[in-house]
Image 1 (cartoon, rainbow, N blue to C red):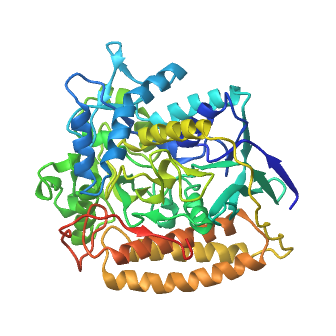
Image 2: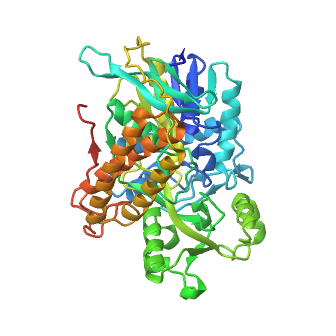
Length: 528
């Protein structure tokens, strides 16, 4: 161990959830924000559509709640859902106070509509809402004397030990790899907030950035936290399908503003969503993703087409400048041409179990944002509910932390010494590629018991190999990410095998109907 640092609060992750928590705590606490790459490299930066909030006189809190419950297919937690929906307008006001440049129309916030919403309630900054919000929060955080950033510090593990009178697990901070030095640093803090995002990189095709490797979920599991609903991986129906385009999604708002899904001319060119669901292109994401998947398999296609070219060019330039520019880079003029799209892993609806204050099963450890499972999303996240969830629960966690007496740091097990032996990077990359292909082929949009059993057996062997490698080789970011992705893949498969029904994002050909009673999947570590 090269060094250690002490703070009042350690926030792991610099997306909307992490920065919201840090900004609310900074006036009274010394806050360290760890981020695996640069501060702006998380998934929040990539969010296009917007933030759902009831701001129109024709809308209502109950309508937003009902839309969320319908999308969640019977598994949403009602208190969590109400907490988020009621807190959303205040979060928008906070962002406006900070200076986020939301799109206006006639001097008022422009509200758009997305799939699954019965009203226009999506606040946005053109088609790059996440980037606009992130820039504003990063600027505010950098101006705060109470916040210190540690970029290019990868979470290795939590500092956990038995610290209570009953031997219950307690978190006292985290170990992180400083990539500039190759050293593992101990960050000691009586409170740690995990805001590391989801685990989309466990799949071959994903809209997520390279940072989305399930680090917080895996570390919390190893520390003794339960996880819930890990089988519910949302596949965004429309990511750009082009050999040179990586991880670029075509916002839900394109369909909200009239975009239609068609087959390529070689397969007849017809619009197909009305045949799958009466809500057509405005059906929830799980319905649209399965429809596209079915049409692609039926016609042996690499992609389908999303067509918004019937809208005026000036409308598209105003509402979708980012999408228009990115597509133009690949020779696609969306004012004239349909956009080739394919489903891709997009959002982890499950995660670390928390209460309404963001607290986990481990004392001193909180989880917020996509890392957490609050119960809001149920079996399928409603579009644009994720960014507001980040803020509502990050604020709740900050209030709880501020109201909790400072705890003395517990005794902690030491981090193992780094070995002089370096793991073969090619071997790590091959294992990672094999895992992602396995998850895509066996644990994707449509599943079967046989595929899940096969995946489970292969993951057991991969876990054995990875843990052996981790125990003997020098710690690197690639090795840590492989270890975490294998662990998260195991949790996804365990959860999917146990759910003998089809519900929301989890669709099994051998159990095509929902069970009479909806119940969350809950996994607990051995000894927890």
